[in-house]
Length: 422
Ligand SMILES: [Zn+2]
Image (cartoon, rainbow, N blue to C red; front, side, top):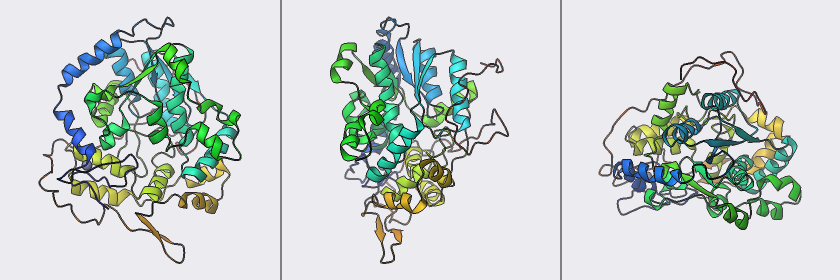
């Protein structure tokens, strides 16, 4: 297995990665644009682009902003509201694996910015049925979240004739350099199907499953091209116009608005996924069982590219986190109605044979990992200058003493009182 000579990404990255003559991956090369592009000028492009959408929908909303209780939501809303001066309609897909902290973050976000929100909550029985099938077909317990988060904003845009959707950063650009920032790539159904949904749109799921019906999947169908064209729906990514640095952005949001962070089971990034019980636990463990690395490799690679970690420090973090057994298996089994052996039976079908092997007794072992892989030839010459620390903060809870280790499907969406600090 080839590993990038600068970051920690392997050749089997599911979004496809390429390496140049120095062994540096496409993601690292596109990341170099963050220090090369004129971001003041790019911000002006963004302002001009969004200006033309002000007061255009006739609904009182200038744009749609998809949000959750974590993952740059505060930064995106802050930018849209305070910098671009737009009035957004927030939309949120209820991921069902919510933590109370995530609900609190979202409730404070709405309240602080005084915004309306459309939340979609699918019937839990349907979500369970779908999730058992996506575990079987793709080894994924997160398909419904990915599908819902990427389609609900588009449905609302079409239905309420609000043409502009504003997303954070583009994952394919950020992780593997699929596009340059200057391509100004926009949201597409094709990318959603091929990458976000692992090739499995609702239509495909319906065709491949004997138990799911069209009614079960109704919420997840992408609107028709014609419907989108009539409204002129487009989705832009702020990361193409703003020098995207999720760590600094979250720290700014902690200072300004008291965004809550929390320790995560399988990674050192305490900012991005605090709203989900499984994202940095069981869901990430499944990623590791499939492709041989977890979110800690994503986060360490990102921090290496920013010069806040050395490659060696990144590998130490991977060593510390990637083999951790997640503590959230039991609640998931209880929720899904699967036995442990059934669950792992489904997941084991999806292990990448390039990194995993199985012995005669049925025991799996990781045969390829960046931990223990030989140091790439060019590692020294492509090393970046170190700048800044890689410390992730833990902020105090706004509800100390409240349990954070169980699902909360629905919670209060608004906060009555909070200190007038903003
Ligand atoms: Zn790289």
